[in-house]
Each structure stands twice: as C-alpha cells, then as structure tokens.
Image (cartoon, rainbow, N blue to C red; front, top):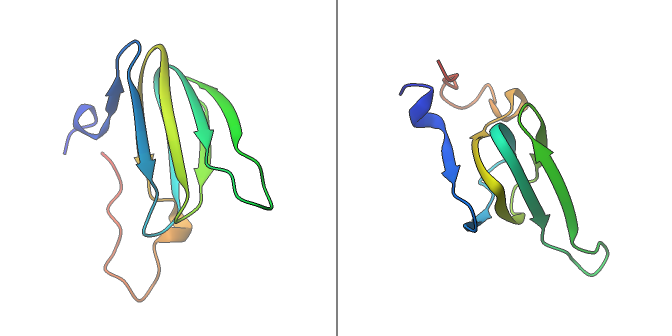
Length: 95
C-alpha cells in the first residue's frame, strides 16, 4: 500500500463517524485541519479537539468519534506500537 492509499480524505462540509477498534488507534492529520468530537459517557462529557497537519490524538478501543474537515483534510488511522502484541502476527508499518 502506498502512502497516499493510507490516507483518508474529507472534503469541505463532509463529516465521518468512526467506531475505533478492535484495539487502540492513533489519528494523525497529514493535511488541513480536523474537528474531532469524542463521544461522551456518564462519567465524561463529549470532547471537541481541533487538530492541524502534523498533530495526532490517541483513540481508545471501543470509542466513537466524529470528524469534520475545516475546510478539507487528509488523515491516517494508525495502530500504535503498543497495539502490536507478541502473541499476534507482526504488525506492518506504513511505507
């Protein structure tokens, strides 16, 4: 898979809802700016985060997020190194 194939793209006004998992992920913004809303729970309210190119955020397994591009963006959803356990097949890193 090439680097460009590993990128998700959002156009102006487009939103995307993601359920994370199985396992934790890291969302890394490659281009543009993203408005990310994490789903709230009884013990923790919903949280809004702005991310620009070069920034990333850790996302817990089982969490739900909504992303919107401002005005457009490209991002990657990565498995963090801690997600590569020794009892699983080796993780492949992006080229």
